[in-house]
Length: 91
Image (cartoon, rainbow, N blue to C red; front, side):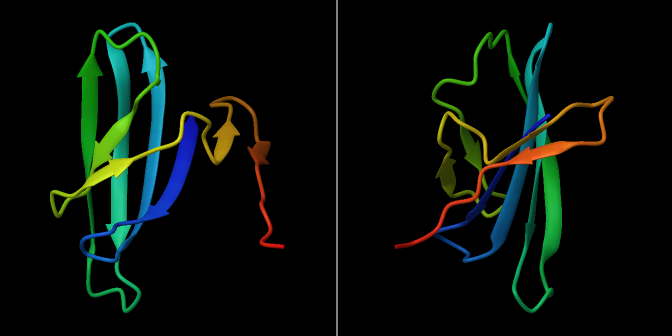
């Protein structure tokens, strides 16, 4: 499972996108929530026939496009308990 975290430029909600490549295509889900927690919703998605995550762009529940970097923020195996996270710092 691959994970991305971002903030929607339209509704300003925090957004978590998780996805994986399956035989049927790229499948995953998106969850968004507002800082005050008055919004907490999500949806599933499927990109049929996708053989790669290159150019993955999710759509927020509000309808705004969320271009995502090719490299996920974190990767976790479905059968493993470890989670590899890339942390960045502002210098």
